[in-house]
Length: 336
Image (cartoon, rainbow, N blue to C red; front, side):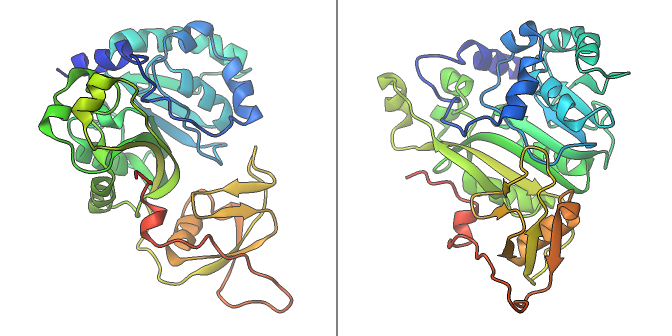
């Protein structure tokens, strides 16, 4: 059944309407450059939707859940650099065959002495069984794949287990405005279009915190449109968004806020860093952040990218306030 759902995803990927391909932000030039170096067959046989690229990747160990033909893995292998490493996990052998076929090709293309990418077969909710060790990755990404899993809590708990302390799960997926009916969950085409397995966004918040993650931080969200009358009739009043969230594995969140200054040393983000829908950090600008964000920045790979000051305004210094929004708005996509 699980492989059937995967094949529906790939087969109906462009079925009548643009479910997975919600509008996205312009792709930065350095990412486009990396994508152009990927072998055409890898790109042609990649069935993911959109692009998921977190910041500050150099030297990191990264895991891609549902890596398919390996397009994102090969793109990210350039961004983590020769000292970093990317692992892709997928359950389908035909996709892995394509990905593995071009390991040596890309190693030479990128000018590396040895490969910094590998691919393993397995399920995204069974990372231990796939041989992935505890506390071994800095970052996990996923691109419109978690919704295809029948056990999303296990996906999150396994991701938490293999992340290092301070690590991040940065992923894009489709979310619903409320819990889905059994009719929608069992609809084969809707499964293939990333809708039948969509998680209610409030369940994401609950599950993430139950397994130990910090509250999800909403990065971007775009409304998913359905331009097919038959499917619209099945969906009724349900609304969907394609959203990117970031979840961190950090110690207990502090109640104390902080003043932070972005140093501008992250490749591709030298002028500013749009961290999420609430916080954008410009170089050398003092920004007041809440305790949650202060804890995330100070206990993650971003710690060296910021200067931290205790609350309280230094003489002669102006402070940038965050966007005015409630705690709910930092995690909830607009599905109205």
